[in-house]
Length: 249
Image (cartoon, rainbow, N blue to C red; front, side, top):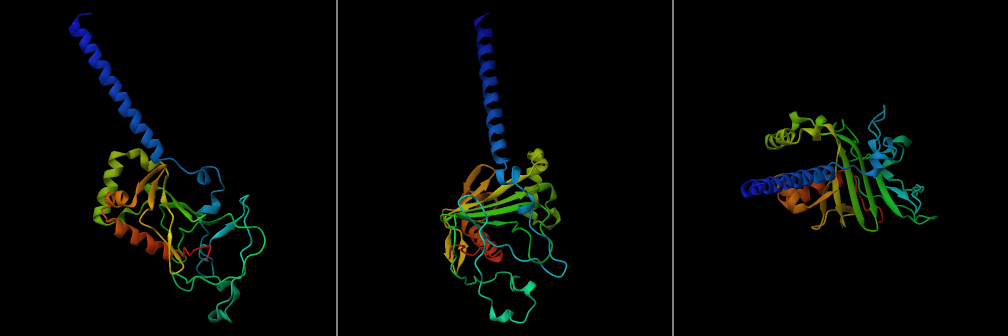
């Protein structure tokens, strides 16, 4: 082999190696970004899909479930009845009187210690129709750490309700990564939240999760064209609306 052909062969081998490395990196992040949690792929998915509304009215709001060390659900301590509900049918006592109900006082819990709290299927609204793009939801609060997860079916996203800027971003993602429309995507938030008026709220150190990848609030906000403060405030309003009270209060 002549020196020129040898150099061409070496150059071709280097380019091929770089291409393979690039493909490997893309494949790695694709798998990471589209990874799904075990609670969705291996659990009883029905308990995370949320209950539909009752025939007689709106469904009860989602509440924290207390679990022991083995993951068994513990009975909820009896809540003190709001005097304003006196005389109302019992089935309405646990329904949210407002979109963001105030924390209710409870009697001290007895029995096994609480290991963690979970909230399942909270994506279904108390009133109205749920977002069809959200398939399941779960939140876990343990030792001061909060994890919120949503499973999204992006193909069912109501594009006609998106703002022009969001619609453009959505269409660009479809063109760039068409395969993502055929897969469920896991997104969420992880944080050591602060407490504001009895509700959980994101701290400046909160992280946004996409599959197994995590981003700071600053990085995530830039991707959606917002400031970190705007994104944090938006999430905090949603947490309050969904009734994310401090389960250990």
